[in-house]
Image (tube, rainbow, N blue to C red; front, side, top):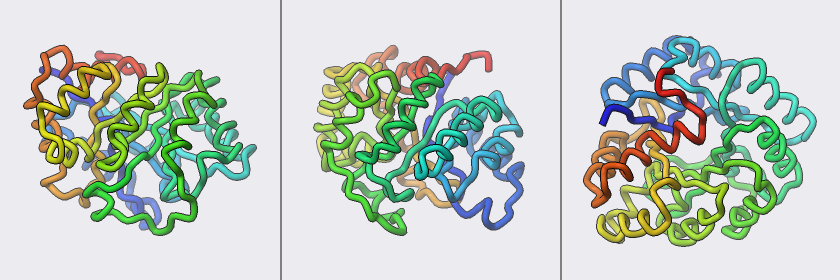
Length: 273
């Protein structure tokens, strides 16, 4: 298997604030990817902690390997749209990352819906944090959670923005894994397996997890590790997750879809870079 694309990697959230040179972050990401057998890395910022310009400078280190997504503060709407268009059209970033917990917004906010429609106009995918009750919630705690986004809020978005490819990160975690499988039956909804695949496999077993993947369709899943440089515990890291996917009772085509082919199609990543 020649390709592995990790669709969910973060630079340290305080790197820009501490004045860390983005080239150093880019070089560390390349070193980390090489050490984990990963071919391409999708670098996700979270506004306002990491700017789109900082991500652009990280990606500049090796644009063939590093793929940058954008982030934006969603209120006020006009500034959010202006920044998103700048990040995509001027900086060349390839998608949008939204994190309701860390950014403190409600998915029912009309500003969120409007930004999603702009993402549709730009033909970019949107990764949205969707995690309850998983080990990562114990390791990495949000500084505040003023909005409670319910399962119903996530279920509504495919109807609100049917033209947007929505990638729900973490598959809902242990609490809502099966419910997010149901949401992902919408043609525009996909799931990144980051972190949760370890705890879900422990909870329901490898055989049952593979059955669910086959039932929904392997084309609905993308590999992501949710790595944060210098922070992610090794027992929940990329190698553990990749090895787990390779051990699942799936056929080779299904594993390749999860590990790289789906990302290539959804994020429009050329195999040649």
